[in-house]
Length: 504
Image (tube, rainbow, N blue to C red; front, side, top):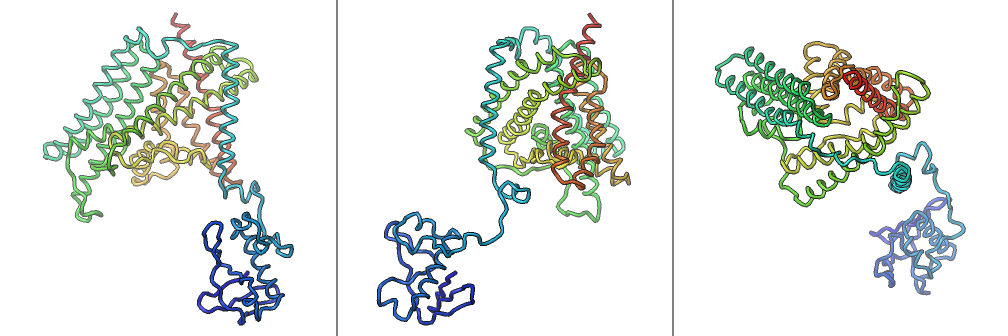
């Protein structure tokens, strides 16, 4: 490779036989390309006029051209090669075409070191084409199966007790604020405040459960109320736990942060109750402004993908479920076929749900509230184990679990494994509440499904360490999307139908 010393005028030629200093060659100015107006590259080629060739033997000039060709091979002068016309800037036969070891782009050592945007676009195009054909085939075979009362009907008015219950949930944060205010004014002691917070949080859960079980409401209304109930409960626990810790730190003489102070603010509590987070703190990072156009675009996407979920549920999932048998009763091969057939539309609905709630809705809410920390999820699709999935798929709940369940267990000398089991136990209870209460079924399928994740965490961790990341990732996809969720859908549907049949 030819290297021009800009300070002196000595050109050193690195060849296979060594380095030759061409002291007789004078430093040349870079030749400007008349075609595009750009200066030539850092490798300077002597001018071809006779006066400039004095003292430079022919073999030396050939070596300069050979070095120029090597530089071109490395990608430095493709623009001049494409310009054509000048033989000095083209490949010479003596220039090596293979200069270093390289891996094929799809080899196991290089496949994850490059972009696959083109393959991703191909997958999207194929996915759209294949599913468009399936949608057309389904419509031609079965017709339009979506009911006109899918979103709202006159019978939905009977769910007004659940709507009133949703509105009344705002009483419990006010009660928690009153307790903290009394503690700050030293009107009640710490043990009394803890007892009051326990009563408030327990009442906040039991009251909606009672209303849902007493009213003959629709499943969607019951699920919405129970989800909101669980969110408010998690926020109340975080508010009480964090306030207690702030008081402890503020009173301690050797506190870590001297700026930590305890105060009670209704404004900060109100902001926390509507913010897209489950972990309370007096102040949050804030964004500078609200992007109204961005919010409108995200809201339009939310409407589109919500409609897509409704279409898949009504047009695909409901017919498959209605035409199936109980998966635990009857032919095993038939049950496997139903689960596999249900897995694809169920996967689409699950992905749409994730995109609508965790990406669109939480970002819309954060934008409207100028909430700065928008890490609502991580790249859970690359989870190397089931444990990694639970750490990345729902960041608000994960942060709450770590902050208010897992590390408090470790601080009271509970070992790591029992602490993990306790965290999954809390999650399993709330998953069961969100599904069993609206269905009025307490067969514990959701509870068992969540607790089954505990052995999967340790199994996939071992497999990931033993065989690599792909094994744990494939087990995660299979356990959630191919087997777990479709099986739960079939179990709850048939138990619900059996319950209605026995009541009638």
